[in-house]
Length: 112
Length: 115
Image (cartoon, rainbow over all chains, first blue to last red; front, side, top):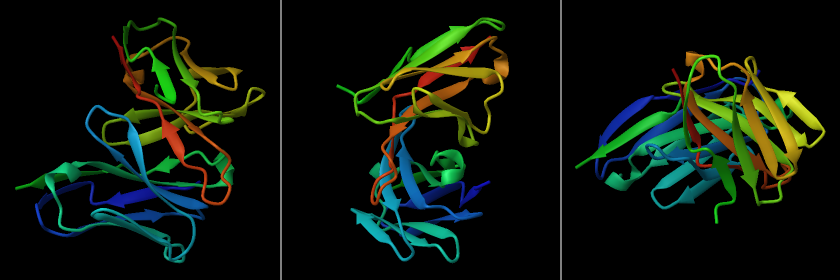
């Protein structure tokens, strides 16, 4: 069974600072996803990482994947308040029809 | 219009009642999923379906059943609701995981409270 662990679970950071969220997974995952969830809202897809060494960037967020280490990272550059949200990583494989196995989420608060 | 819709958006029910949560999608996807979200636990898979005739249990299917009435509709039922089924329920759809694909698109969620 694919298990996904994120850390940290809670993160408070100042505007303008950089930080990284880590996502480890236990067994082969065909792809790795990052989602964002605002309070009381649904999940918004941020990135899909397909292969070892994949790197994707959107604005102040950059995601990477190391399949050998079974590790994905979400790097935040020069944080702004609008990035405050909960970020989930998730893996999938054919064992459960490519359903997503989620980490517990990282609750990010960006303060002035 | 939203691609994935869920009804109702909020529901309060009593222990022992049967309730149904409905999901519809206009994305034309074959794959549909039901997840449950509890604070601090992330999302967990309840059931998934590849097409009308293919339904599969997920990690936490006990106490739930589903029906895939059409490609676009996937309903989740709680046969006899209990308080620990109080949660936020999400429906999601995806296309086949071809190269670059496989992203799941989530509905707005149904917030369920079982008293």
